[in-house]
Every structure is written in structure tokens, then in C-alpha cells.
Figure 1: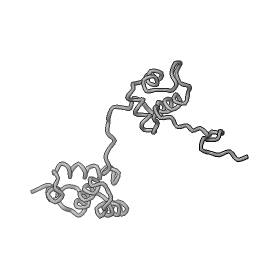
Figure 2: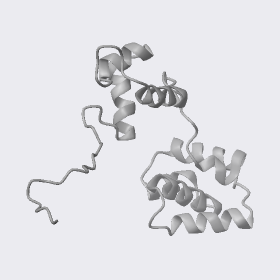
Figure 3: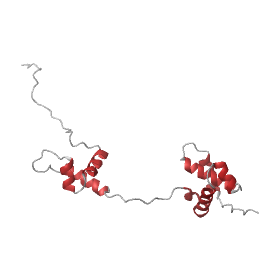
Figure 4: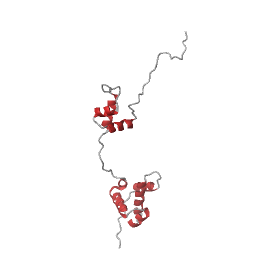
Length: 158
């Protein structure tokens, strides 16, 4: 005789959330799939049948059932993943932007990528990445001049 898997407990608000997720057209497909799994399990279907209907493995169904039992709806979201921490943070971005506002190095009319990266002690690529993200182009000068002299095409009225 096959073992019967425990049916997870589900509050009324969780049931309503699962129903909305299953019928949603704008929700992430993996959350919709997880909601479908839990909804079928709450209906009393066996793990093998749920896995066959959804098109996934039995281990996946069991894993999401465990996560739902322990954490409820919050357990259906992805857990944060590990990864290499960013080497340069918001403080570095602020330093780059403040440095660009400073007067340019001696012997240069304006900042360029290599001199900016040397000044900050960072790689050229990192500095360019920050500048690009902020929409700053070091080569382009955005200034204007309002001339008070008359242009050649104007006639002088006396």
C-alpha cells in the first residue's frame, strides 16, 4: 500500500492567493506552476499524479510541498542566491560622480577615463560602467554661449 503524503494546511487568505496566482496571466510562470502544484496537493491528489499533470518530477512536487508546509505562500518564492559580492558599491558611484565635478588633472583640459580611474584607484572598465549607467559622456561638452555681439547677417538700425 502506498504511503499517503500529508495534505498541507492552508488558510483562507493563502487559498485566495493561490487561486489568483493560478489564474494570473501576468505572474511569473514558475510561481504559477508552484501554485498549481500546491493547489492540486490541497485537493488531495497524489504526488505522482500532480507531477504527471504539471509535467515535472516528483522530487520537485515534494520540495514545494515541504516549502509550503514550513513557510506558507512565502515559501513559494525563490530563496536569495549566493554570489560574488559587488566590489564597487553606491559609495564608489558617488565618488566617481564627485570626482567628475572636480577640476581636471594638471595638464588636461577635462577628465578622461584613464585619468579618472587612476585618480580613484579602480579599473577603467568599472569607471566607464558607472559613467555609462549615469549617462555621462566625458568627450561631449554640454555648454552654450550667448553672444552679445551682433551677427554678420544683422543690419544695424540707427
